[in-house]
Length: 211
Image 1 (cartoon, rainbow, N blue to C red):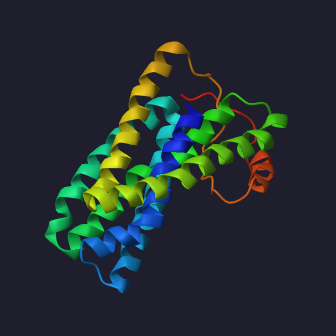
Image 2 (image 1 turned 120 degrees about the vertical axis):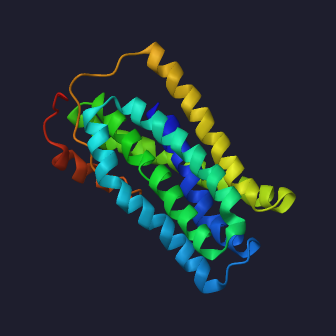
């Protein structure tokens, strides 16, 4: 479930970051507006960290991933339809998209670490980053071609399909395996270098049992 989550996180963020400027150009944004468009996405993700972290520590993280992906599908639909509403509506759509998609990587990695021992955390972080890299390499190539073939809305349609797949897969995993009772605390996990795994190993501390 965690591996699937980071792949879908890559599908969302890498496509938006790399192909988002093309989308912005296609819907009529100026160069400076495209910069604000990308910044609005990051702003939405930053605003989501604390409330989503609280939910991820309180409830089954698979449910958090499932509901985040369901919300991401809704945000993709909204973003697609409000693009004709002007620049302000496009920015609002970007914030909403960031709110629903940005935390998925951190929730997925937290879920994976719930099942890991302390001496496995660095390798686990590196493995999850490898899965993220696979999605981050493939998704911009696919999304740029889809925009070329079907127009700018194809970007968010592709991302929505990925999140629908994660919802279905998450429901299957919910039936296949129980989650652990003791969990590691949720923290924001930047996708930079596997070296951060060593830092997180020190920061996560003891596992806790949600109330």
